[in-house]
Length: 161
Image (cartoon, rainbow, N blue to C red; front, side, top):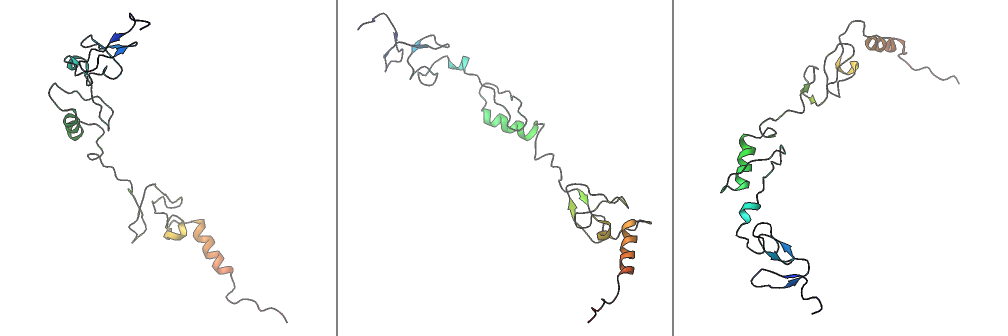
């Protein structure tokens, strides 16, 4: 060997590979190669002191504390069922809340559509004053509709031959 003093042997019993860039485990303070440096790979007896993870709730993005011996999945599930502030199953808001004011119509809309004349809420089909029979007095739409009917001739003029 050209550099016998460089590098260290992997502390894993089955490996003992000479590694020039060994990784020292921060829990057991032994040197390992790239294949055995993780706690699980070399079965570190002190991993429980270092490998502490706090799960995060996927709904409200807040950390959920887990005590020793508890399964994180079970604790997060309990949090989502009881303590979660952003539980979509608990606070179900209705989307279609604006009911049409036209008599006989049961449609609901996501957005409020208010008539400028009578100030009532209507669905998309009945949004125009002519469509919902607007009863507002002095409504220009009603007057123009009546005037347009009065001005149209009942018979079409015959072309001259």
